[in-house]
Length: 173
Ligand SMILES: [Zn+2]
Image 1 (spheres, rainbow, N blue to C red):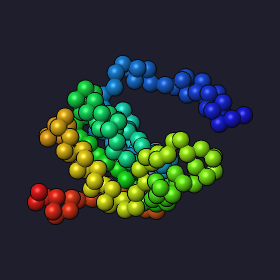
Image 2 (cartoon, protein in one colour):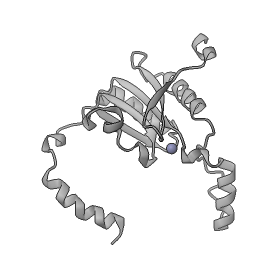
Image 3 (cartoon, helix red, strand yellow):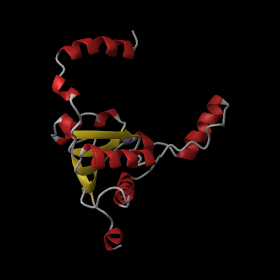
Image 4 (cartoon, rainbow, N blue to C red):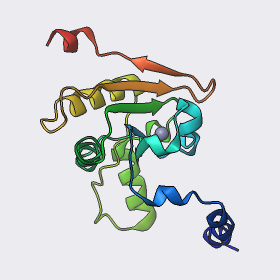
């Protein structure tokens, strides 16, 4: 049985104890942008917040793309999130290659260069990545200045998160 077929079967069991109040409407209190990495999946556990309070926006890295910015606008302007957390992590798979390398590798592997150059949002330094994300989100004109935007790195070894502060030059700017 495929993993998806197994999941479909398990869903019948889940539905029996599903909280039907959740069907009413979403009421998130915080938007968390984090990586697709499965080690970041237990956000209620990692952050000690109820699942219903967290709008989870996930991309590889995570990359703060135009789509992610749109989701943050909706989360804060439409759905009611009051804070934005950018949650990076150590040991990210997106630091193990560069966009150029992977484009070349997949072109060679498939013999088809037509998707190239595909933007994969690889990066090297999670701290720099976090600072760049804060800059991008903070400077968006549709994300209200009253909404705190803070960046963090989750340590996959210890399970602890630590805050990444803006570099001095950004604070002065
Ligand atoms: Zn990652």
